[in-house]
Length: 314
Image 1: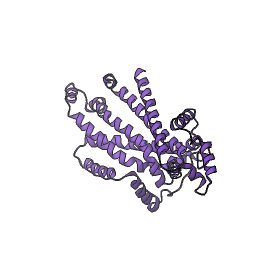
Image 2: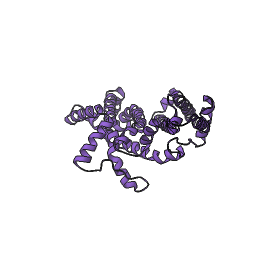
Image 3: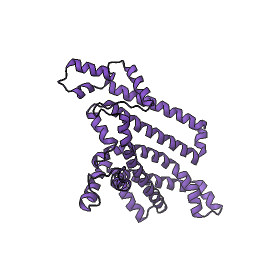
Image 4: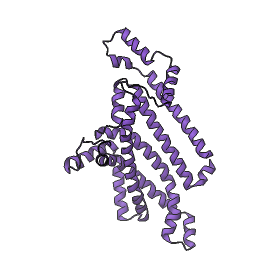
C-alpha cells in the first residue's frame, strides 16, 4: 500500500504540473478567443463585456485557480464555440477514443506475443526471416499512412467496410466495434512489429543466460524452463514497452480518427484548436494526460507483481 500511495502522489503531482503548463501555454498564446467568438466587426464594448463574463480579465493565477477548482469538481467549463458544457462533450466522445485505442492494444497483444515467442524459438528459420522483413516494413509505415493503405485496400478494393461510415456505440455496439476494427488495425500494426522484435530479442537474450543451463541440468523439461523461467524474465522489458505503446495509442488515435472520419476526441480537439476554444482543448489534454499516468501506474503495479525485487530496489 505504501508503494501504491507513493505512486498516487507522484501521479497527482504530474497532473498538477501538466494542468499548470497547459493553462499557461494557452494564456500566453497569441490570439484572442473573444475575437474568434464575436468576429472582427464586434464593438470594443461587446468584446470587453464578454471578456469580463468569461473571466479573461482576471490575473493568470486567479484564472488558473478558478479553472483547476472547477475541473476537480467535474466542471470543465463552457465551450466557446458550441456553448455547451465541455464535460458533456468529453463524456460523449471519450468512449469512442478509448474503444479505438483499447481495441488496437488488444490486437497488438494477441498478435505480438505468439509471434514474438514463435520467432524466438525458431531463430534463423524461414518464418523468422519473413516475419523480420514484415516487421521492418510495418515499423517504417506511420499509422496514418497505414490507415490510408487499409482504407484503399479493404475499403475500396475488397469493400469489406465503407470508408467514412460509422455507427455509434449507443445505437449498435456490435457494428460500432466492426467499424473500429480497421482503424484499430492501422494503429496496432507498427506497435505490434516493435513488440514482436522486442520480445524476440528479449527471449533470445534470456535463453543464453546461465540460469537456463542450470534449470536444464536439473532435469526440467523444455517447455517448463521456457514458460516458468525464460518467458517470465523476458517479458519484463516488454511490459514497459506495452505500457508506453498503450499511452501512445490513446494519443495517436486522434490522428487515425481523422483518417477514418471517426467522431472521437480527435475531431473536436482539432476543431477547437482552430477556433481557439481553449476550455475544450485544455480538458481533452488533461484527460489524455490522466489516462497516460493511470496506464503508467498500472504498468508499475504489474512490474511489482511479476518481479517484487523492482519495488524493493526503489
